Length: 482
Image (cartoon, rainbow, N blue to C red; front, side):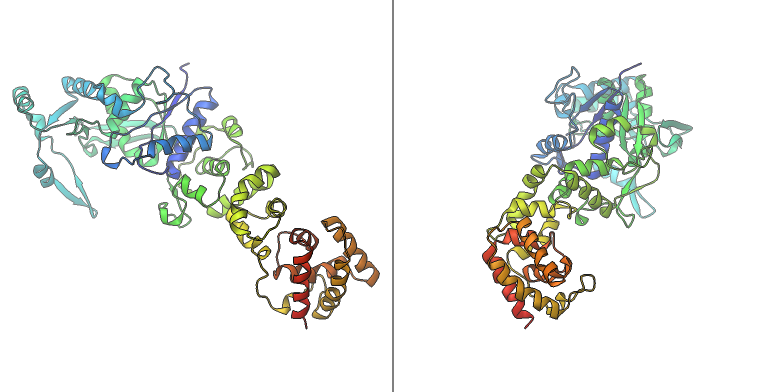
């Protein structure tokens, strides 16, 4: 059997869209699951949309996600160049376009922009231009004369206008379209560059790509691709078209919503490995109930036949949950290193950030969640005395006043200021006075934080704040209770 070769062929036009990341991921998984080759090809034929630095961003994104290519511009596997503009300079696309002209499968078109504009029609509110094969009727002599004079031209595919074309997709099955719907698409543009569609077919064949993964929006172009393969006499690759990704309102993903690109998600504090795990499940269902997958586990489990036809919904809450699961399981030292920039941003008090990291690790879903959990370490927010009343611990304003009055001198005398020593001292105080531990800890934690919810218990907070700051806050809390 032929070794599986897949490719990811992005255009350097900016940040990597979530849909493009999924395409890259599925292409990678298909290749690696079968022990095949994953190829990176840069498709920079659309010079008008080229963004400076975007190629480096592609490399960085693939590196951050672990989708390391086996061949590409920086790893020649014998099928290079792997950048389309470099391939164009070698005349590859013009050579193959001329072969199609010789076969009658393509033709030179010299129509002016003015004439093309006259062919525009409006269908369902959308303006389209369907070429009328005007230049197909030009004689060989007329074509050669125009070329000799340097008249601007494009090369168009010569598609039939009658009959049907059928192609097979691994997800959507056999699809048949009327040839009357196939426009004579441009293969070579007037600037000499190939169009995206034509360059794809030529490069996929020359690079021996066996499986082509792309979005569902390319289904309508597949008949044109097939006709090119047939015109050349080439084997058609396996098509794997992935379902559309929408937001929770079943609309197109937008930059405004913050989940359009991989970089957007990193900027919001998501982990790259959690994003990859989540994106893998946007349209693909594994066997069983497992939802958390490492990249290695995805490689073993991935079967592209389990990709769905239905649109996949980008559920931000699900991604937050999944990211939180990754944070909980992370090695504490690694968590501290990753959380440190956020801790340094949100905690300005001179306290032990490593201990605070230990407090928040299991309580956040994304790193920016740290802010609302730790801001009280800087200063106690204004709060009302009603926080001291709690049904669960049976705390009241009266019991809280008693506990704080007794705890302040007790803690002033405490020499060992560690969580264990402080907990033991306060627990012993509660036992002596017939108070349950929760009744003792509740008012102390409220006075220290001014919050109903904190990332840690009272004695852990005492330890981090230190003796002087803790006593200062406890005394202020007692004053608030009168």
